[in-house]
Amino acid sequence: MNDAYVLSDSEVVLSRARAGDAAALERVYRAYETPVYNLARRICRTVEDAEDVLQETFFEVCRSIGQYRGDGSLWGWVRSIAASKALMRLRRNKYRDTDELDEEFHRPTMKVDGGLRMDLEAALERLSDTARAVVWLHDVEGCSHAEIGALFGASASFSKSQLARAHERLRDLLHVEGGGTSCFPVSSTP
Image (tube, rainbow, N blue to C red; front, side, top):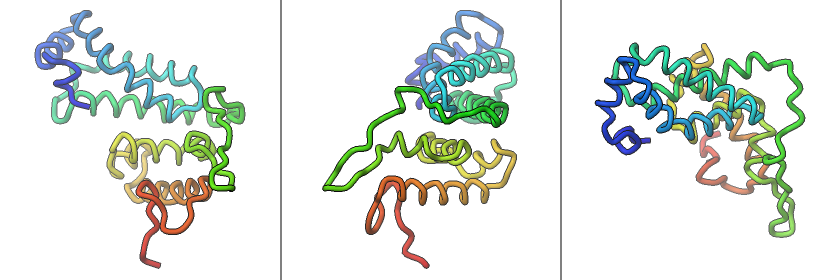
């Protein structure tokens, strides 16, 4: 996401937000509320948890915007806060029953070429919380393995192995045959 596109006068807005200007903080919120919610919704299993993560993220952004150094993009900083809050929510809810999924994610299995195939959304929902979060952060959000490992308090190798296992599970769930797909390539090395 391009900050200049989202906030056409981002330097001015950022400067005012750092000074505590409520209107500037609202502009930052409005610019990033949808991508933060979407990220939280993909990592968390429920709409309620995603809404809580959205709120917690922007409480933290408002509280800490003075500490934003500007080394990377503003969206990258906000995204890291959102991902951290979503993962904390997962840990907090670890023992909660997550078998009952939100209705919007209950999609029928599709019949293709005489065989049954699962929809990608349904397949993602069947992954563990950790695997789903790693897939989303790496494959969709573009986070590096080092960034993902840090969010989990682990190494880049942790992220790489989680992603490899998740891709294998998704291939199995989606009944991908042969040489894989561009999303889930099959390695040519044994």
